[in-house]
Image (cartoon, rainbow, N blue to C red; front, side, top):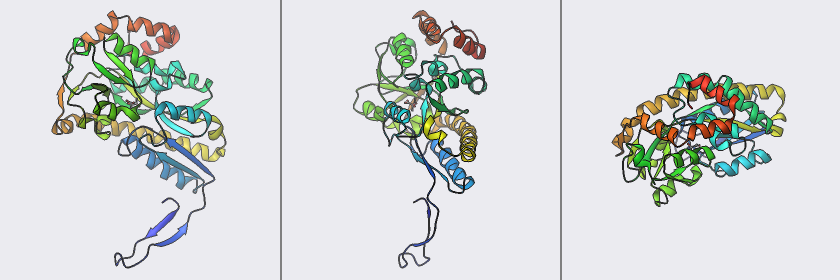
Length: 333
Ligand code: X2X
């Protein structure tokens, strides 16, 4: 465990574990929750940051990472972070929008089509707008958003090639009005389900499909319960790192600087990991038996347009926020 170093005897089994040294108890323990498995680059880089933070604060700040929804499903943990029972979490901006509506703006269908545009917007004026809104809601939001990725649609029983294939399609979407609105515009039958329950919802056929970046399909083993994958790239989604304001402000200032610096730096490395992983996973998932297809995005986007999706969300986000989005990605509605 943390704080103890074990030295194993060379004659395996014959010597008891010898404990040398016991680190001072941390002055601050920050519990940080997320929804992806320990193997996802998000958790790999969080662990690395936790080590750096412990080292640089001389053990004063301990970051305890809880992957795979161990502390609860996203919407529950969000409430716990607001209350301070859990100090930190990573969360999709779209799910955070249940609290701060502005946070779902990056999820507008087909708005983003490449990573350079994503990072320029999220590290620039669009991200700053979201952080300001989240700040008003009493939460701390770290500067660098972590990557989830471009989302693809998987299905258990049929490939999705055209918008017509999405008609009445029973699809799990995360808990967020934007996701429900988008798949309703496609004519699908979306059901809001937290990620914590997604695997079992697919396994028991409560829904026939879901949509996620390949890194999630792989690390959460969704390929075990899905047969087809359509490379729609219909949305870019990231994980914001948020903290309870009271808890984070209680960290001594010098340590707080270290925590912010290390976590923002870890996000930058995680972005590279996820992009590399998503780029190579198609081949690996094919070997696992997933059948891929790459639909033309144009008719899907046209379908959203015809359904009034862009106009509706332009109205919801308001002209200023919409101008920031269009300033980054070009005209949408
Ligand atoms: O819930 C999901 O699908 C996930 C893991 O992609 C998010 O956190 C939005």
